[in-house]
Image (cartoon, rainbow, N blue to C red; front, top):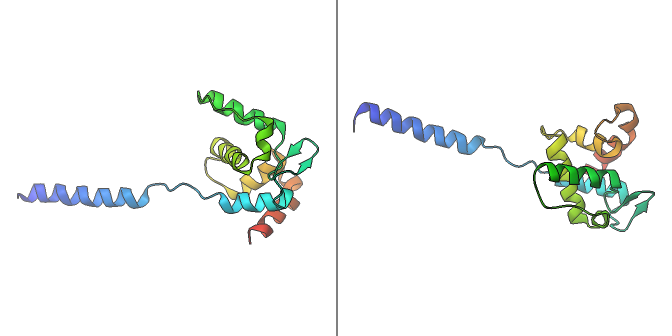
Length: 137
């Protein structure tokens, strides 16, 4: 084996090992979702507060936003207002919103936006943010 071929092989092996160890891992939103569920409804999937329903207290505007995101992605999947009472589907909607509006997986942004919408004001979401952080600990 020539020296050049050995050098290429070493480079390939190093490159592959670097890529495999630095590949982006999916972000784990589970602790955040669990804390939001605790703060929003104390875990009650049947909770209703005005127009917000389910364990994560999802309102019709968020369902519509999720469906618009899915439509833009050419997905046939759609959520219904009844899906807000499903913890599984509520979590799917949360993840979809994070994927779309929070590509950098910023936990603070996710919590504040869940309470105040994607154009939230920090001051008006401070109390909620502290409650969710406390529930995460």
